[in-house]
Image (tube, rainbow, N blue to C red):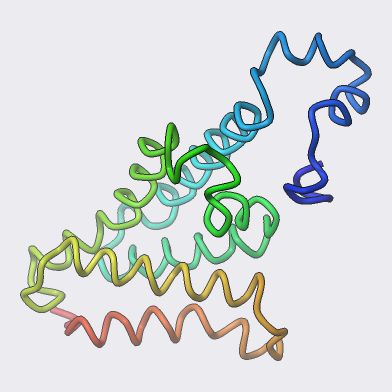
Length: 179
């Protein structure tokens, strides 16, 4: 329901009906809509973390950064409703931004930023605060993903090249070197 109808279309009563159970039966598993959304967020963030690990964990840092950025953008494009719910409409998920989700969201950002820290420490990125460099890379990934999911349609060839171009521009701005 979240994927097909978005946050506004999801209700526990409608979900219970679709599952063929009563609302009280569903409430035995989740406290409320926020609890259900948090469970969905947890599963999705774990999946995203797995994607990051699979995206070049054994490659050199700059290539790993590129692969993780592309994995993030691909996730957003493949799961636009979930991406929006997780990363663009955060207050809808919890009573306070990031409440309860902080550990997994932070872990996803940490895993995405790990190769940035390696690139700074081995001199592939100029001497800069590694957290600032990782946040810069995350901001670029987030911006590209949001543009492709919610922005005006781009010509296919531009959309296909945007993530690589943006991440390479960010890395160049951070003083990327090949040695």
